[in-house]
Length: 85
Image (cartoon, rainbow, N blue to C red; front, side):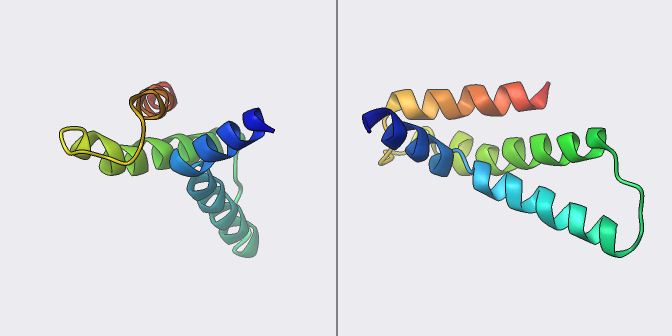
């Protein structure tokens, strides 16, 4: 149960749900207007959403005292950097 709690906390704090919702809206928009959508485009949208959202959320506030632990912020930064590549 503790692992599930850690996973869900990471999922929420790293804003993966935001990236998934952006992909869903993009897919629905392309489907509605009969555009061809590729997996590469969806992956790009997901990665740029994770990177952009976490960059604004965490990288600017690293000097401020935050409610998140240092380990959690490090994991989120690693996820953001990996999504860049």
